[in-house]
View 1 (cartoon, rainbow, N blue to C red):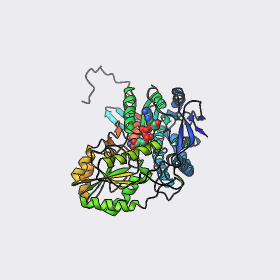
View 2: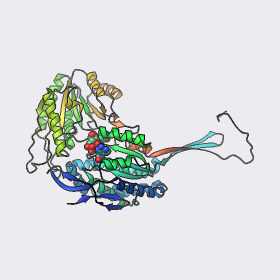
View 3: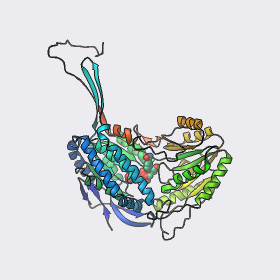
View 4: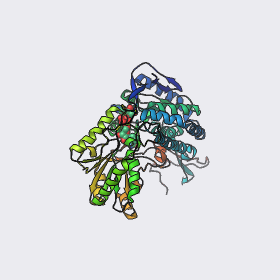
Length: 498
Ligand code: NAD
């Protein structure tokens, strides 16, 4: 059985040491192992990055961008293999993996605009014969730690932008889905990236802590669950590093009485159950305004859910696959049990699914729970499984209050035909990414991605314009070339324009 190693200084290495099992979640079998980097191995990677930095920093942005153009082509021509690797370790269906890859490629395309993005700001004559400009300089060696659920897209939120901004990068992928991430890092080298500019270290807390406590790491981007995001943010900040740490979510959709219900039902199905609900933007709560809407919604959802198909990643007719591990499966089932015990009604029960040929897979069927209330454990927590909960309220303000009171604020959506209601909602809702009749309002690559409240620790969102700011440091230069013929006296007051 193979062991996935690290990519350091352009070389694949596989040192002896601790390893972890990588499962195929559809079969429940261990299919390979992954090396867990020691602190020493992480230091080796940082050394390689540190050594590569001066030349990379001085490489013109247009040359860095050309590597990204080639990288984009390689991602496209290797799409099938990338999607297979994602499917084998994550379990998501091939069409969903292709969507993940495409969203990642769009970030590479955005990074190809580096010469434009890094132009800086210039002001002529801010004083007599004085010009001033701000330029955006690279930080040095930066790190990224990524979650299991987007092994390609999330690294592509970080790496292309950090690199075109002139930084060297240490990437620590999820130990549950390491192969696709390592493969795209190899493609980036095939595209012409010099050795040491991007290094991949697989591992767990030991590797992450080695990055957090190394003074050579200037900035850390993290995407994962909220408790770890908070730990990363506090630790990195205390070490004087710049940090953005994106965490978990509980995304609500408000269904208004005037909504186009059939379209809302279809889009809720995809957003709640796509990728087995293992997306940080998954819609896991539908808040129905009025009992009439709630009854109709539950009826239509329950009927449509009978037609959902789940199974292995390589059968394209499946709608979604298994969840990531056996432990996670138990956790998801535990939340459904707790909702039932706290008085909710399980309308469609996915706790005992049967998938012929995959009896040992980590499957949970699509589950619909009605009569959920704000005090329930299943409502407070991020379930991260194919579970949609219905909350019934009387007014839109009550629905918004519920969302604003929740600890997470990643994404939300309203289904309505009323523009005034939609605008009122987007103005006042305490959530970072808002959809109007759009269930998964994941910003495109030319905007930036990030939630509010405990869904994001830090000031700058991921990728897009905020990505450029996160991976660069502003320097402002003020310049004057005085004439040799003019003698000036000493000036002791604060310089001003008189
Ligand atoms: P996770 O927090 O368990 O792991 C994320 C990363 O942190 C992994 O690389 C892991 O190795 C590392 N890690 C785990 N425990 C650690 C520890 N104690 N110390 C240091 N590092 C540690 O998350 P996950 O299960 O891989 O991913 C699912 C979570 O990610 C969900 O909560 C989901 O909402 C969130 N997520 C958020 C976004 C977003 O943009 N906000 C996007 C994708 C996923």
